[in-house]
Length: 156
Image (cartoon, rainbow, N blue to C red; front, side, top):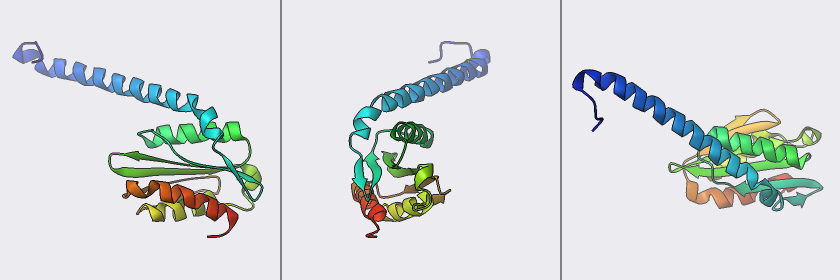
């Protein structure tokens, strides 16, 4: 299968694994780039709640790093507000919440993500400006993300 002599199998296997890692990195980078290219469309979904721009959306990324990169990109473009993103991967939920500096006196990213994660059967936390969480009920992600607007409005 590897088209090599038995004595060269170890070296061939190492080379194949290195190629696989390179391709996985390239694929992750391409997916991240594609996700950030859709940021304009995502930002158009932001709603204003009590004078605060709030974006709570499900996105298609498959790693916590890609989710964080996309959230950072959206926060930078938004300039002022709250970004909450959720994604489903391998039967699990990944969540991230970012709060811009001008809203830290009213909102804590860790508190928001903890409440949202509870809906998807998980938990998490973090700093006032950035928090991450996970969960085990991906089917509840839309319900969890809709809760963000209630949290920001103070109705939760």
